[in-house]
Length: 368
Image (cartoon, rainbow, N blue to C red; front, side, top):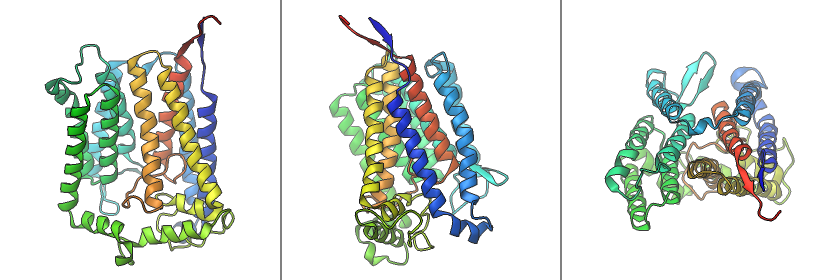
C-alpha cells in the first residue's frame, strides 16, 4: 500500500513555537532601545510583524504548491542568477557598520545572503543528484563548485565571515551526503580550515576577535565586551530565569540583545529550563527534517531537504555557541527567533520547501 504522508505536523508545530518565542523575546528586549533610537517602543516588533505576515504568505504558498518546483532546473538556475544579482547589488548601497550586506527600500532592508544560501542548497541538490554527475571526478566536481566559489567570494567581499563559514560547512555536508569519498572529504575539510586560518591572519580585526574569543577578559571594552556581557546574562538567569521582561543586560549592556545575542536574554529571563527548551525545539526540527529527507522519493529531494535542515541547524548552533562563549562572535541570527525580517523570511521559506517535500512524498507500507 502506498500512502501520501501529508504535511509533517510536528515540524510545522516546532516552527510556529519558535516564531512565537521569537516574538515574545523581541517584545521583551526591544522597547527601551526602540524608544531611545526611534521614538517608538514597538519599532522592531512592528517591522518583524510585517515580515512575518509576508513570510507566512510565502510559507503557505510554498507548502501548497502542487508541482515540485524545486526540481525544475531552469527555475533553480534563475534563482541562482537572482542570488548573484542581489549579492552584487549590495555594494551600490550605503555601508552599515562598515559592511555592505543590505539592500535598502526606504526604511526597510533585506540581506541577500540569507536568500543566497537557499539558492545554493537548491543548486547543489540539483547538480549533485544528476545521474551523469560523478562526484568523485575532481574535474567535474570542480566545475560544479565554481558558482559556490564565486558566491563565497562575493560574501567575503561584503565582508560577512560568518555566512562565509556557514556556506562552506553546508557545502561539505551536501558533498558528504552525496557520496564524496572520505579521502576527498578530508582534503576539502582541511583546505577549508586552512583557508579560514589564512583569512583570520590576513585581517587584524579577525585576529582580535579570535584572540578575544580565547581570552575575552583581555578585551573587556572592545571585542570581548559582547561575549562577557552575554555570559553575565546567561549566568544570572539561573534555573528558572528572572522572568519575561526582567532582563537587565538588555538595557544597553548587551549589544544586539534582540538579534545576535537573543539566546542570552532567553537564558536570563527564562533560565536554564527555557534555554534548554529552545535547544530541544531545534533538535526536534533536525530530527523531523531528517525523517522527511529519508522518506523523500528521489535522491534530489533527499539532498535538498538535508541541506535545508542543516542550514537551519548550523545557524542555530553557531548563534547559541557564540552566546555561551563556545564560538567567536559572528553576526549569525537565531532562526525564527532573532529580530531581523530577512532571517525570519528565509527561515519560513526553508521550512515551506521542506514541508512541501513532506506533502509530496509517498510512504510505502508492506502487508498493511
